Image (cartoon, rainbow, N blue to C red; front, top):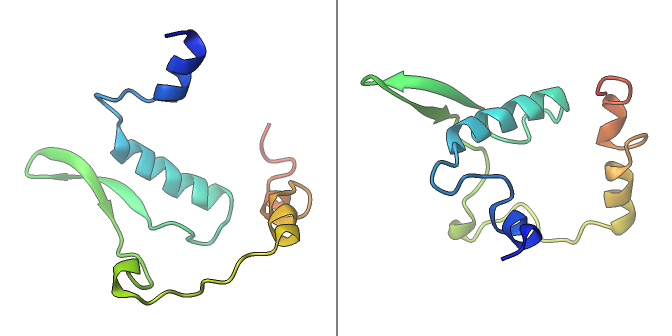
Length: 99
């Protein structure tokens, strides 16, 4: 296996110790930094019965298993491009804040 395929397989995440809880908390912090206004559920580290873990708030909305969806319309490509543009979409809040 060459170096590139190994990188693809693991993406820098240790499969035996993925530290998922820390990744959940980091996602919460990133949501705050980007000012996405609670796009993801809030996660925090917690200790219960002397064990470290994560606790997350209950997500709003419907379970996809319930057959109820908020919408199934395709998002227009130009809207996606606008939101992805660092000077126009969500990124405009970060211009000058991140090096």
